[in-house]
Length: 238
Image (tube, rainbow, N blue to C red; front, side, top):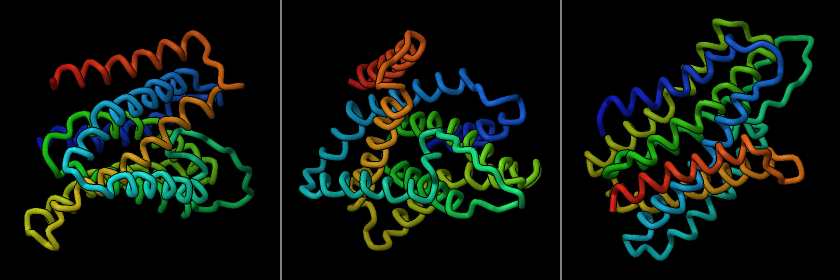
């Protein structure tokens, strides 16, 4: 995988998080549209690209690992408050409290997403991860600031989160290159976990964030654009 893709993964999350300093107030309408677009794009690439690729190796247990990924994401969200899909839950604190559960679960989530990138050409997955990390990093920075972590600490921890997906790629690539435990034989199962995570995140973005599950026109356009771009990428590879 080209190093520009690694840089894309890092800087999408980093700039997504640090952009919190450019917004004032709680009404982030543009971010909500980005969130809707990224959710639709994630769902599109998962159905069109990731699921068929995972089943291509005739591994009968891929479906089991998709379920594991889906359920694992539910567990992670007990600690992260749903920040993976851009939800920002404001809490009032009199003292500075570091949200360690949120930070650890987000980093583990991003690390797992980076692991399948070491196997073959995963352009669609790179773009999907980069897109959905923008609102996730923004939400993380918002929570850090709400918990009185300060600007410098917030930037530092956003950078830590941003490096997790590239770290997952390099870790997986190093193990695969060294033939430690024949990791390459398990890539479809690792991909299955990521697919389960993506299915949970994308469907949550599309439906939980809409009042009464209804889309307004702007959100509908964002969703259709996300699906259309995923479909164009799929057709291009045929």
